[in-house]
Amino acid sequence: MSKKYVLDACSVIAYLVKEEGSDVIETLINDAIEKEAELLMHMINFFEVFYDTWKSQGEATAMIVFELFKKLPVTLIESISDEVLTEAARLKNGYHISVADSFALATAKIHGATLVTSDHHEFDPVEKSGENTFLWIR
Image (cartoon, rainbow, N blue to C red; front, side, top):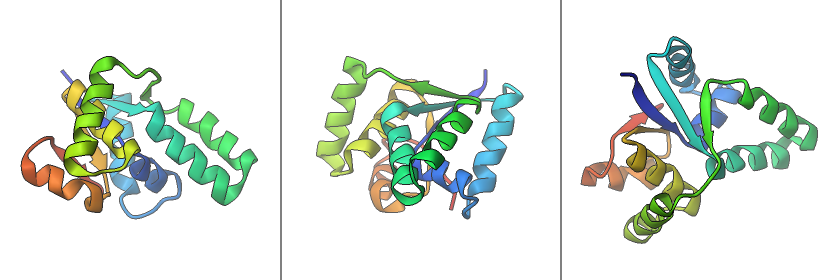
């Protein structure tokens, strides 16, 4: 059985713009190609990537990023189940994290996955509590 990972927006942005930590994402992508890992991302978190690209580089580049992303071995979760909605609300309330980050974390928890991120500001308190496992890209 392959290990499951949920990517948050900052991990995908790091990969796309070759920031520090992009090598970690590249390794996970290669592992997913080899069926040694399963990569998931909630559409809400991909929206952050899409919006950030649109805002900083324009619509044309955002559309290229979207097409490139669809070719990656990442399962994009497009729906919001009752379970994810409830868990995201609980996590946002309990840890005062952003809405998008609460969905990334809820998706990871519901799927029994490790959350891949560099967002220590949001997730260090969650890791400290033992709520979920994290793979820090930097």
